[in-house]
Image (cartoon, helix red, strand yellow):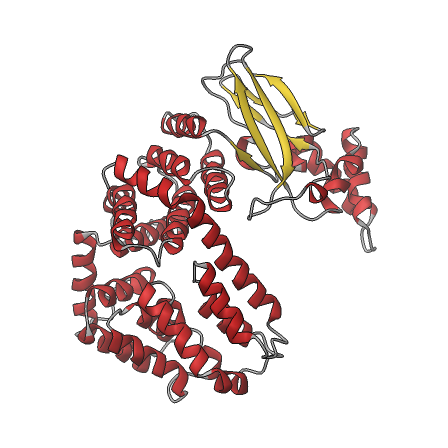
Length: 465
């Protein structure tokens, strides 16, 4: 953010002066600001101390006036619960707006007070926080989001713009600043997206939305799966799932992400490919599954299959020579949904015969991803609580991790109450913060559902899912 404000060359010159002046010595934050001020001629300390001395960051709300071809921007404190009280909203940040239009980027534009109106050359295309170097969220109307999606498809936005825009829209929908339907409409403009980092944001938001709806009616959950599949299938197929020496690290991650996402949503071609790889793998061909796809393949065949597939993945856990191979198998076992296989996964973790104490949380990863597993996981934790406390002393972080994995996936107020009731009267020393964060996550999802369940259902119905 500072680099954008000063210009990269000026910023680097300030860094050089800072390092030279303070070589082999100790410094304070103000020494860095002084060096940058010296290089740029701008009062960097005055601008930056507001950011570094206060917790949090703002949300910038944008409204438009077509008659005057202007935008009105207003800043408030951002909270993921969207319930900021007046006494919590007194800090005013110097916000670098970075206005992108067809004429380029205006890096000098800044909001230094609560709100201000700025002229825009053409309201048909503009975007704040160009390249997303500014530390804030931007809230646009649903209509503007849809138009930005079209702008992205037209190639008017940078990779950073596109990824940051999806991240903003997703966070603001989850926290209640804007309707989720607006974000879903935005995502429909990204079917031709070519960059991994943007798809990582898209699939991350969709996974978060599906997790929030995990305990809702099956029809809505199926519709969300269908939406995710429609958005990701073509890209997964075009990338493919074979790897060559020319594939860089990012390209490998890209292929693995899209294969896993579309496969987990039931893409028939990918499911068939995963089952074929798995059959060859369990028959002794260790090269049949590329390491980047191993977790996805295991998860897909477990979700689609039964005891035979479970035994195959369990055998991999028991016999694999490399620890990362064993851990991959252990983490995915919970993807199996049959009650008897869910119980076997729980017994594997809690019995303590095959799974090392430090790995006890790993079988939980797959279980928390579906309703049957999440409910059984909580029941297993509560029934084995005394054993867990004995094995995982509260002074270590492991117990807190187990509590968070087992508790944070719930989405209803009554489930939050259930969690509180279980821990009432028990010592939470050593994991009280993790427990509080889990309860916050449950209540945040509950609030999201109360606000937007009907909004999401109406949007899915309108779009034919």
